[in-house]
Image 1 (spheres, rainbow, N blue to C red):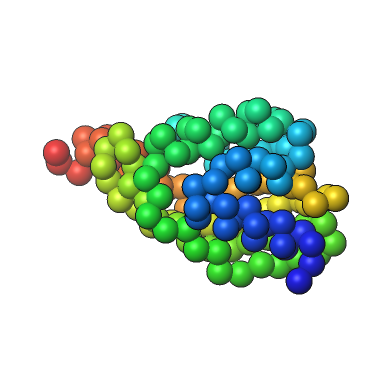
Image 2 (cartoon, rainbow, N blue to C red):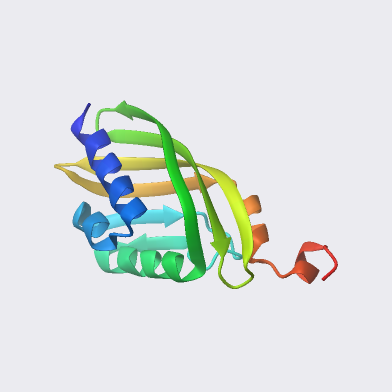
Length: 139
């Protein structure tokens, strides 16, 4: 296993335990973090630096009760890692559950993540954050 894959796997293991401090420790001080820029997701956006990355995780953990997070496959080339998987959760504002596939692109240098971009089925996730009337489903 390459070092970049190990770093990503260590971050995922920490996420599964709820250990955000351990994740942040594996991110470079100037991490460039991009997560689906969808208005319905309270945690989406572009975050620069470890302090803003901490804000991303604060928004994520206060808006989603994560039920499962399952990395399934890793593809690595040099410093770049693409991980594929699924996650399930409950949108705290609405109480609605969701399950979505994701792909995450990482760049890891010198044992720390320097860049992250998330791609997921944001339509599925965002629908869980919409009240019934906004989704077209009668309340």
